Length: 335
Image (cartoon, rainbow, N blue to C red; front, side, top):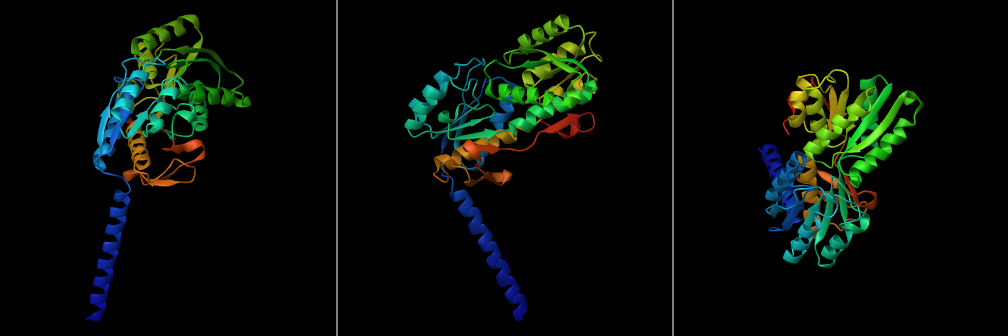
């Protein structure tokens, strides 16, 4: 009889220790933290998904979350929201920056008032924040975009890039790595003819797509590393004579792109889960605001269902590698 009793006691002890560990993990985040998300633009479907992920995380750790931001993606359009949040003395601001430098003075003012600042999706200069939550390694995203479009084009022909805004940190970093990848000898027969900007506006991106096709009649592909631009380009090409002749790829959400994959306009595109990106950013902000971390390289923190995460060089935390979506797997995803 002693052995079963000992086993039961051991099981009880293990359960208790696990319970204590979970309580300790939860205890590292204070209750009632006020955390505000500031997206690039409030009505962007990608941003909405990311912000919803953040709000879900905040609910998990019993915080008070809200989303405020502009309807346009201009360089200085987020300033007034950051200033208001600073006046309101929220515990943390999580921002997807429209410009790497325009927000820095205002975010520094927020930090000087004790507010923790996390950037996600699109970074500021490091002086403007304590942690940057990145979708994936910027180099792998940029190089991956070229590798994908090259496969679609058969490594030959003219292509264009349809970007968001000229100052978007993430877009410009990815494009830099796209250009680096393009220098490899296997892409010698590919030519980047134009980088166009749709300013993360659906109609402008639609018109820019039309302009690219008119200006470059031999165009074989458009790469749009922005969800708004990708959907707009696909919509234009799906109802034009270019359908089946010009490949469209880039970064977008499965729900936005599903109809264009199904009708053959888009063969493949890439993205990470923006909801998980917002979720991770919220946990980073909460741990900062609770004093569990200071944003230093090598520190680790608990990120709920995403597990333990480590802060890297320059305060960067990486979500993970992007996924390639095509007709074979797109119905497995809903975001």
